[in-house]
Length: 158
Image (cartoon, rainbow, N blue to C red):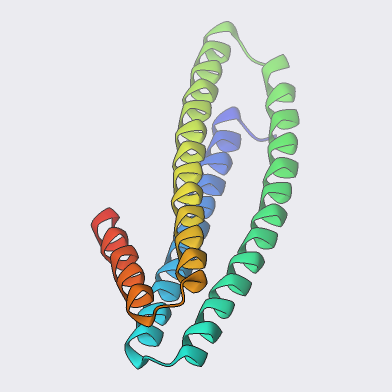
């Protein structure tokens, strides 16, 4: 039988995996910003359109992958909850209090991570919107100015 501590340790390891996944997504977004700058510097309308299309298609892919990861996380979370309930039935009062406190801490950490994920999502959606506004503009100079402004904001946030 696994102890409650081992179950908790498994949950912490899973959380670390989720944080690494978020870091990979952030790195992919940084790659899209770099591609946009290369297109901007090349001054090629076709290259700029291709770069924006590539960024958009990668964004759609990330959204699909994110939905799949959320489903996997929810399934794992349900399994962990069942394991914890099994252990709670077999514990003493002191162990029960310790377990409840640990679960509360995990819930607080999870809510903080979810808030950070939402902040990143909002920031990314805002950047996509600005990129689409840039494409809608007909002036090359205005397009370069807006992309440069977006790049400046991105570097200040990072």
